Figure 1 (cartoon, rainbow, N blue to C red):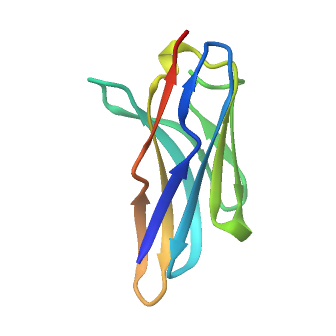
Figure 2 (figure 1 turned 30 degrees about the horizontal axis):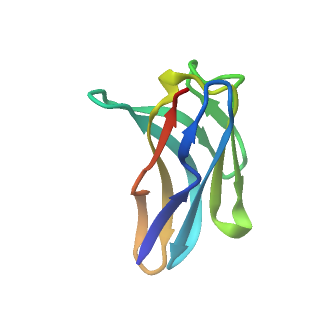
Length: 120
């Protein structure tokens, strides 16, 4: 009934920029924190950034000053603006959200992932 759909990944040269989007849809009555994680080949899934319903943000040290997380509560959408991209940012990026489902309760949902490749 609830799904997260990501978009915006792709191939970019080092130093370039990408903007990821993740829209939540379905029987939603509220969304608390939203965030982005990433997983490089052979590595664990790591936190990139989170944002609360009140727009407080938290970033991994590796992306501070380069990435910006934001959200549009009216659209149930979270964004990740990625600037000054480096080859080590290459990974599958996943969005996640803590969602209140109508008639059910609060659950953590994950998107399907979108590939970001930084290469010349």
